[in-house]
Length: 250
Image (cartoon, rainbow, N blue to C red; front, side, top):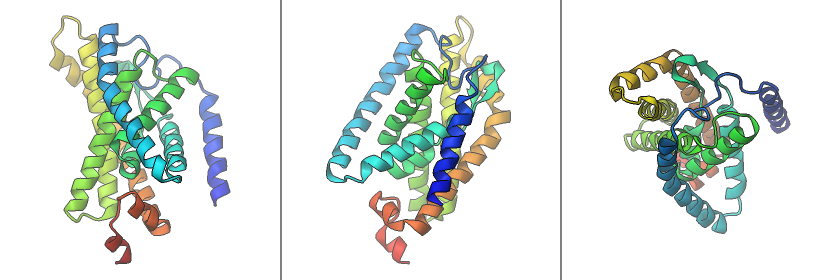
């Protein structure tokens, strides 16, 4: 089964690589945001990435199995977020993100780092997103998506909500939070002298036809992965503080 999964992932990467970006690059495209706004979002993203790197170094120094897990999640986020659906009215693309799952397993700060790496590779080699808009894409997908998904999952688990339901809603909220913040970034950057709110609502509404079903799909993926791990590797979820030891014994 492991070999089949690896072959599937490699095949998916090859298929994606065979279709380079066209009129609408994934995430926020290069040149969409004015430089001052691109710089602002980069400044906002920087402390989250630096703290995530600190957390990664701290945990991996005492747990040698943590680095391979982070690498695996980076590959998952990269592949999931390489599924662009053009949204011409927004000047960008809609796509699943994978940050909800990464945040649940790794924590939101390290998930932000994972997203930053995936976004950088996509910008450099797939023409998806851009270097000047890298910071803005990190904020929307890596920061907002990760923290929204993480806190949704934790809050629901505190309320004793079932693991599958908590994972499902965390995946949805992580996805939708990404596109809410992307709408904020686009509207604030390209509005010029126009009012912010009308443009923001126009962009946000333009995402609904694609992101509503994609968000539900991402919720299903997140729930499925978390439930699968709880059955196959509950020790891993306990180690990552997703489950409590008493939850496994029950």
